[in-house]
Image 1 (cartoon, rainbow, N blue to C red):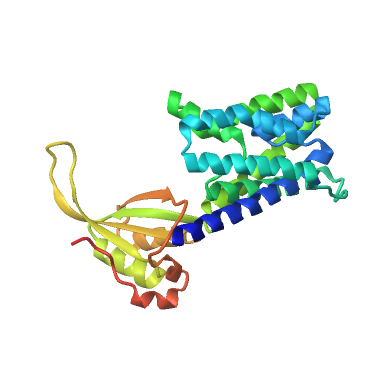
Image 2 (image 1 turned 90 degrees about the vertical axis):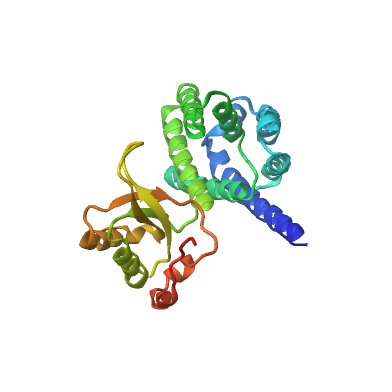
Length: 297
C-alpha cells in the first residue's frame, strides 16, 4: 500500500511538472521563437524553420535518446520518461494561450522559470523530460566525460547554430532562457534550502561539539578516527565531527571554530538532499538544548 501511494504521488508530481513545462513553452517561448537547450531546443529550432508541428518533432527527436536510455536507465525511470515526454508533446499541441507579454526579457525569464520548474519536479520524481540528459549519462558511462560538460557542449553547438540560422539576438535570449531553466532545475532537485555539510578535525573537538550544538543549534555526528601521515606515520586518536548547516550560517561556524582552534582541519561539501535527523529542529535554536551527540559505539 505504501509503495502504491508513493507511486501515485510521484506520477501526480510528474504530471504537475509536465504541465508547468508545457505552459513555459507554449505561453512564453514558442510564440516568440525562443529556444531552450537540449532536445526541446532542437525541436523548437526545426519547427521554427520548417513549420512542422512542434509536438511531432519533440517525439521524434526524443526517440533516439530514449533508445540510448534502454541501455543506461532503469526500466522504471525509462517508462516514466516516455510517459512524460509523450504527455508534454500532447499538451503543447492542445494548449492555447493569449499573448501574455511582448517583453523579450520577461519571456526569457518567466519561460525559463516555468520550464525549469517543470523539468526539476519531473527529475526529482524519476522522469527525464529532455533527451540530452540521457545522452550525458551515456557519454559519461562510455568515456568518463561528466554529464554537465556533455550537456554544456551540446547546447553550445545548438546556440551557435541558432545564431547563424536565426539571429544572434535570438541566440542570446535563448542562452538567457537556458540559464534560468538550469537554475530552476537545480532549485527543485536540490531544494530551496541551501545546506552544506562540514567535517571538522581538531584536538579540541569536544569544545567545538558543545558550541555547535548549544550556540548554533545544529545536530552533530562524531566519528572515532586515527590521525597520521604516510603508511608508517604517527597515529593518534581523533574525534571527527560532521554536521549539516544552512549556508547562511557558514561564516558563524567558521568564527566559532577559529575561536577554539584556528588550526582545525575543515572540509566543506554540498548537500543535495536531507531527510530525517534533527536538521529541522536546527532551524529552531531554542529547541537545540535537547539535542544529543550521535556517536558510534
